[in-house]
Image (cartoon, rainbow, N blue to C red; front, side, top):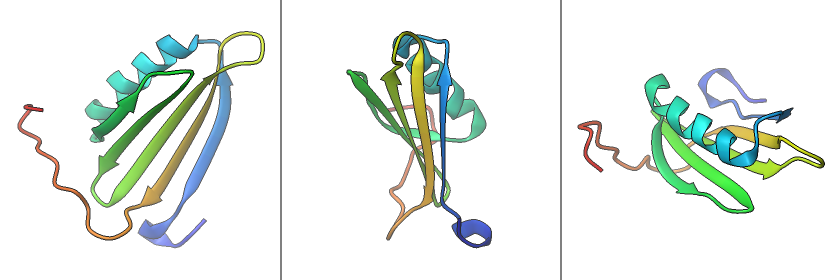
Amino acid sequence: MGQAGAWTGRLVFSTKLPPGEAFTFYQDLMEPHGWHLLSATRAGTSLLTCLRGDRVATIQIEAGFLRGSTILVTVTPCQGQSPRVSTSGTR
């Protein structure tokens, strides 16, 4: 939904991966694809928030009904000024 670079989207899906493994998978996957991790919370409902340019991705991971995980990925344009992110490898 939206125009050109200002689109917003959400993807919801289930995976056979347990929540802890899904969290690690996305935590390890985002940076090689140009997304910088801003925040990570591992809990009953885990959240990863990442930034790439003027886009923010939020990944929410919850335990599935019987097994596996339900994952919600939301990507939106940044509102206001984007935070500065160091790409030097130091955190």
